[in-house]
Structure formats: C-alpha cells, structure tokens
Amino acid sequence: MRKSALAGWLLLAPSLALLGGLVLFPILYNAWLSLFDKHAFLPVQSFVGLKHYVYFAHDEEFWNSFRHGLIYAAATLVLQLAVGIPAALLLNEGFRGRNLLRGVVLFPYVIPTIVAIILWKWLLNDSYGLVNHWLVAGRVTDAPVAWLGKDWIMTSLVITSVWQFFPFVVVTYLARLQTIAPELYEAATVDGAGAGRRFLHVTLPQTASVLFVIVLLRSIWMFTKFDTVWLMAGDGGVSRYIRTLPVYAYARSFTYLQAGMGAALAVIMFLILILATAAYFRVFRHEALS
Amino acid sequence: MSTRHRARRLGLYAGAVVLALVGAFPLFWMLSTSLKPSGEIFATPPGLIPTRPTLDNFWRLFTETSFLTYFRNSATVALTAVLLTLAVSSLGAYGLTRFSFRGRDQVAGLILTTYMFAPVMIIIPFYILVKQLGLVNTHLALVLSYTTFCLPFCLWLLRAFFQSIPLELEEAALVDGAGRGRAVWHVVLPLALPGLIATAIFTFILAYNDFLFSMVLITSEELKTLPVGVNDLFNATIVDWGMIMAAGVMITAPAVVFFAAVQRYLVQGWGAGGVKG
View 1 (cartoon, chains in turn blue, cyan):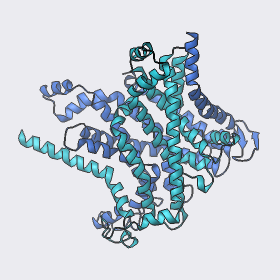
View 2 (view 1 turned 180 degrees about the vertical axis):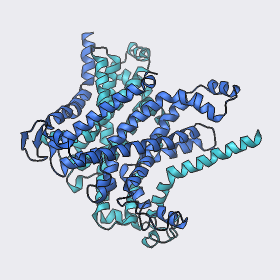
View 3 (view 1 turned 135 degrees about the horizontal axis):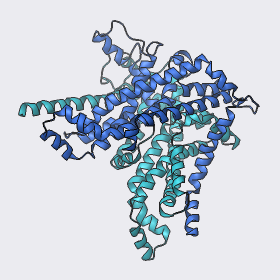
View 4 (view 1 turned 90 degrees about the horizontal axis):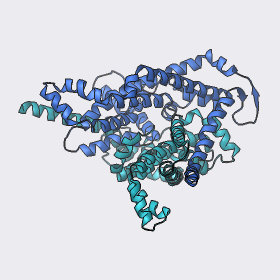
C-alpha cells in the first residue's frame, strides 16, 4: 500500500511539477503582483496596495473594454448556438456524404487563428473583397462597406469568431444527439407530434445538460479570447473599438509596461468569471444537476 | 406522404450544401487567390477559379520571406510538445488510475480546475517566471508552455481511457511473467490508442495555433513560429494578398492533413471532454 502510494505520486510528479510551477504559482504570483507598481521588464517595483483596483473603478478604458467583452461574448455565443445547433441537427440525419460533411464542418475550428484572420480580412477587404463585391453587385448596398473601419470592425470580429468557433457547438451537441434513444422519438411520433414538437419535447429536454456545458464553456472562452481579437486590429487604429479586457490587460503589461496594472486586470477578469459562473450555476441549478 | 418525404430530402440537401459552403468556401477562396497572378487577384469581377494559375505567390513566399524558418520552428515546437505531453500525461493518468493513495481524487479535481485559467490571465507572471529561469527566447519555453496548458485536458481524457481498460487484462500479462513496463506497453497503451491519438491532436492543434506565448516569449526572428511570423508579414508593408493567401494555404495544409489522418479516432476523445479554444 505505501509502496503503491509512492509509485502513484512519482508517476504524477512531472504533471504536478509543470502545473504547479507554470500555472498555480503564476496565479498566486499574479495576485501578489497586482498590489505593486511594477515595470514589465526592469526589476523595479513598489508596494501600492489596492491602488490599481481603485484606479480601474474610475477608468473609462476599463469600462469600455468590459462592455466590448460583454457584447463580443454575448453576440458570438448566441450566433454560435444559432448556427451550430441546426447544423448538428442536420448532421444527425441520414444522407449521402454526411461523414464527409462532418469533417468539412470542423475545418474552421482546426485551422490556426492567424489563417482565419487573414482569410476574413481578405473576404471583407473594402476595395477588393468578395463580400463587398457581392453586396454591391447584388444591389444590397450602393457603395462598398468599410468592414474593417471603426463602425463595422466589431461586426467583422463577430463574424470571423462565429465562423471559427461554431464547429465546437456542432461537435459537442452532435455527440449528445447521437445518444438519444430512438424510442423517445417513436413514442412522440405515435402521439402525433410533428418535427417542431418533437424537437421541443424530446430533443431539447434531452440535450439541456449538454447545452448547459456548451454555454458555460463558450461564454468563458469568448470572454477570455485573446488571439482572435488582438489579430483583428492589433493595438493601434481601430483596435479601441473592439478592445476587450484580455487585450487591455495585455496592452497594460506589454505596451505600457505596467505589469502591476496588467496583473490587477487579470485578477478582476478572474473575479468576474467566478461571480458569473456562480450566478449561472444558481440560475440553472436544475440543468447543472442532471 | 411521398411528396412530404421528397420535400424533406430536398430540405436536407439544401441545408447540407449551405453548411458545406460555410465550412469550406472561405478556404477554397484562399486557395484560389493564392494561385492567381496579381492582375487576377484585383480584377473586377473577381473570378472564382484562376484562369492562369501560377505558383508565383508561393515562390515569393519561400524566397523573399523567412516563412520556411517559421514553418520549421512551428513543426519542431508542436511535435516536441506532442511527444512530451503524451509522455507526461500517460504517466500521470496511469498513476491516477492504477495506484490508490490519499488525496488522489482531490489532486485530479485540482488538475481540472487549472483548466479554467486562460493563458492570457497569467501571461504576465508567466513571462516574469520564464525570464527568471533564463528561458526567454527559447523553443524550450514554448514547449513547456504548451505541454502545461494541454495537461489538464489530456490527463482527464487519458484517465477516462485507462479507467475503461479492465485491470484483469493487465494482471493476466503480469501473471504470464511480463514486467509492469511490458504489460503497460503491450496491453494498456494499445487499448488506450484512441485516447493517445486524441491527446496528440489536441496538443498539436493548441501548439501549432498558439499566438500569445509565441509573441511574448520569442523575440528573435529566427526562432519565431508561424502565427507571429505571418502576422508580421501581414503588418509589414502594403499587403501582398497573393503571398499572404499562399502562407495561409501552407499553414493550413499540415493541420488538415494531420487532422484528416486521425479524425476517425477523434470523435471518441471529443465526446469525452471537449476541446478548448
């Protein structure tokens, strides 16, 4: 028994060393760092207590970033569900080429973010982009739309992100759909339920718990998304119209070199996520338990 | 009934075509642009298929930029991270499932909690730590980052796979005189193969895709990986769209090939725990 415990710990040691050293320690160090004025590269620091937190409470840029983050997370979440769930329902039906299509749908999720970004910047290019060409040729708009200008950049970011991440919803939802017992549908059909009512009374209740997880994970991941948002506009020009909290935290640390302030923003993000997750579990207690 | 049936099939195929276009058309457009001479790229109306296809854009990409260096760096770092993650997480998952010790389930729970932290939320202390260790601007720093951030998912995934393998099979091998190492190698690992493959895919995608760690931890041109290198190319001067699309095609190809080769194993792994991103 003692020997077995030792062996167990030894086998886990490399994992625990990496996670402890490179995740848990930085988390604690980050909280500590948020109480200091610290230069990002130079070894200069002085204790300032909660000064950064007080500062952000009155910082317009902070509230803008927070608002952008909420808009971005909410819009992309709703659209990912709106595209992903019907797609999963479709891919659960039997038709020729279904397996191929299941693979094709995963493409956007598998390709690196940088590819999704350059691809959509090209499609949405104001002078030579295919989207504008179609919009003008189809007389939807009179003049090309400045998709990457300040008025439309958030829309473009949302479109790109939904395209990139909806396959996650498809795969996860489809995995659950495939395990619903066919008898449930047969019984509903015998009772005279049409497709719409079968969805409402069989599919939806059966998939409530997986939807609970999908909404939770995708919200957290969209709220903390860095690379897609950053690559869309960098940190100059129109970037301030889509700047979310992760990007703001990055800019504080590595552009303004105020590591303490960046760390404080990370702590704030973490607290927001904890509170939101707790509230979410409270509201959807039923789904969480099933 | 039969007209309703036919309408239903028509609807299904219409939906399937739309979905296929959503998934694949942007990638098709990237490929098409990358094969066009510059006159065609900016033509109105834009042609869907290049009339005079050329590899000129790829040639410029390979000869006038550091693309091939980025490519080699990305491949090296991603594959090393895959091997290291496979080794570390198999050992860990085996320890979690085959040995009982106090606090085992708490450790497993704690490991899962670390999965909740997005890299961007600890990138500042992470950078300072890596700097203290003298690992800034090394590929080792990237490999360790990717391995660490893949571990929670991979440990849980492999734990589920190892749990599903009956102990009796392993014991039978031990009774037959095999050492524990051989029993694991010949009995446990082959049965957990779908899990190992899912682990490999997950790690490869995360490492190959990463932008944040690479941007923060790597400073010299010759060590940059694809996402940062190509973003630099994109921001450098007037955008050479043909060449940038060629870069996109080159980045996508290995990811799609890798993925297609092992996709049939993936559904199981995906169902077991979701993929982060």
